[in-house]
Amino acid sequence: MIETVFDLPVENQIFYAVLGFSWTVYLWEAYLSFRQRTIYRTTTHVPQELGKIMDSETFEKSRLYQLDKSNFSFWSGLYSETEGTLILLLGGIPFLWSIAGTLIARFGFSSEYEITQSLVFLMLATLFSAFTGLPWSLYNTFVIEEKHGFNQQTLGFFLKDAIKKFVVTQCILLPVTSLLLYIIKIGGDYFFIYAWLFTLAVSLVLVTIYADYIAPLFDKFTPLPEGELKTDIEAMAKSISFPLTKVYVVEGSKRSSHSNAYFYGFFKNKRIVLFDTLLEDYSPLNKTGEPQPEQPESDDTSNESKAKPKNKKQGCNNPEILAVLGHELGHWKLGHTIKNIVISQMNSFLCFFLFAVLIGRKELFVAFGFTDNQPTLIGLMIIFQFIFSPYNELLSFCLTVLSRRFEFQADAFARSMGKASELYSALIKLNKDNLGFPVADWLFSMWHYSHPPLLERLRELGNVKQD
Image 1 (cartoon, rainbow, N blue to C red):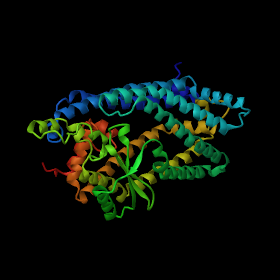
Image 2: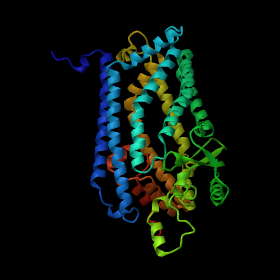
Image 3: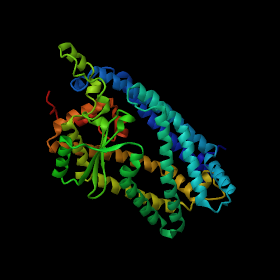
Image 4: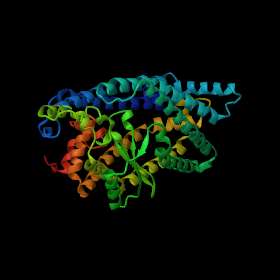
């Protein structure tokens, strides 16, 4: 008689269900990526509707860049899925837990010191992840990003940065995890409420201190100099009652030529951060290739200058920067930030509640090799990472759809401020600077893009850009 998966013990059913769903998601993602790679390979000429906003040279550069990234993503994703499968099949999680127990035993701690063993396990797991991910990160930075002109890092800077990130992560992760485990241990029947409140408090504290105390460990932040741009930013913030206190420029150019902008802070202490690569007048990347004032002016010299547009046109001019910030401030004015926080915390509360329901199920632990004990940290990993994975995939897709909706609304807000034309040109410039490919497979775009494709955003803004 043939034995089916449903005839197996419940713990085996759980294990194979988790493994099967993981590979189902991977194959779905691989199929979507294949569809998008087909677009990259076959769309070799600028579509007619893009003719006025992207030249053929930039189009080809962006196509090759995205194709390289997609190929890299395929192989790194295959490795990651294979590694995860082998860890589960070979009992890597209980093996690492036993190593953590052996290590603490050498310092006189018995298995009763579960939180101590959990912290050692967590450190070993993150160390393993850092080492296995390092070759992929090196290849992405020093081959793909370097090849396409984005990488600005040296190998020494990269390695120093990686070590610093690991240390800072441990300094935050280990104390927070130990307190969370302690709260779950002593919280009684309603521990899930206390655990949720604790994670809420931690997230609020981290958001508050990140840009002031954590981010400066990695990047240099300087106040935006006094001048027309700062005055205009402050005036725009005041016009919509945005409680702006400071405007910073971050030295993103020492890592990459990609650009970005964001705001942070709670209540009456909002701050705006601009990447130097976003600012046409401040980007160090624009200093290369600038014409010298001593050179004689002539038609030939002028033509040479125009033939090197990459350095001269990196970033946006002041009106375009204001339009980009108008979009970002639109997220605040329309309550998108608060809505995202509320959704995140509702999800967090639900997950902790379900964790409280499931943590007593011994078969969940047995399914992953823990037959003699049920460590709380392992329970968190099993339930949040494996058991909730179908729910997490559905939630991720819903949040992606919501994010696109928010982006359209923020664009409309900037347009209502009279900045449609400037935002239109800024989106085109940023797409060129970051080598974004403007043609996307509809299914890939629907599943992955948290921001609408360029053409969709330009259509919503209307054809307001004047030649």
